[in-house]
Image (cartoon, rainbow, N blue to C red; front, side):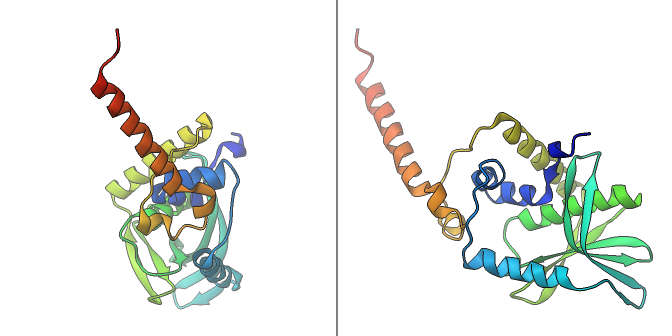
Length: 209
């Protein structure tokens, strides 16, 4: 299997947050940083920089390269705790728990990789949020697994097509995105509105004979 055909785990999180963000980062190779991404990067660096350690009944591994040949996924897990030899993934995120499931999906994709690597079932993992300084347990139920594989399929289809998803402006999402200036969703949204207005105006006048 060609490793270049694999989907990065981060791409799944980007896609569920915004398909256009995914394409700008992973297809167009555009990246800029803002306060939010810088905070997230520093949090990941702190999580990844520690050495493996052991606690009673737990072996902690950091910055673990993982992959799934079955699902054609690959990436790096911030922390994998081996509890009795069974992996328990822990992903570090800035901020606090989200209303969407993008973070849950990325963690579930890690579990799919680890299940294949360790030949075991992984029922749950955890997201550690920098703002709350607490872990949020994520259960890898059938719905989340199905969503994860569905998003992986959508990402692969978008990548293979080479098409850039159209922008759609959503303030809560777009105003926090580091690619706001590169994407310019407000301008695109206005252009689409004008186009729809013209279509309605032409349709209202009827087709000339």
